[in-house]
Image (cartoon, one colour):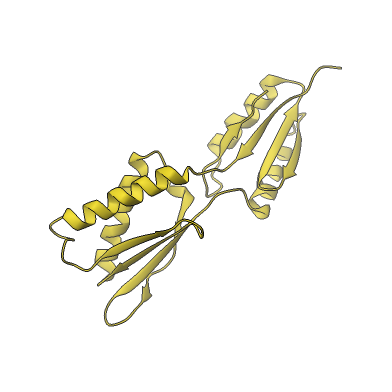
Length: 165
C-alpha cells in the first residue's frame, strides 16, 4: 500500500501584524488633517480579538474603517478575516462600530468544506480536528486538485494550506 500524503486546512491570523497595523492606523488618525480633531478613535482588544471604532458620525467611522483596512492589507492580513458589524448609536450623535477578527475554522464552515470536497468524488479522506481540517490521500496530485478547488471557493474567511507532506 502506498504511503498516505496529507495537508491541513487552517485559518490563522498573525496577531502581531494586526497590532502593528492598528498602531499605524492610530498614528494616521492623529496626523490626518480631516480626522485629527474629529474625535474618532480606534481600539484593539487582543484577548477578545476585536476592533472598536468610535466616531462622531457614520461617515467618519467609515473613513476610520478604510484607514484600518488599508493598514491591515499593507501588513498582509486578509480583510475577510475581519467581520465588521453594523454601526450602533452611542452618546450624543456619535456611533460605535465593532469588528471581530476570525481565527480558526468553525464547525459549520468545516462541515461545508468537507461536503464540498466530498462532492468532488476524489479519493481523499477529510477529518475535522478542532479548528482545522486534515485532508489525506495516497496521491499528491489529488491533494493538489483539492487545494486548487478550495482556493477558488469563498468560505468567508482566509484559508491556508499547511503541513503538506
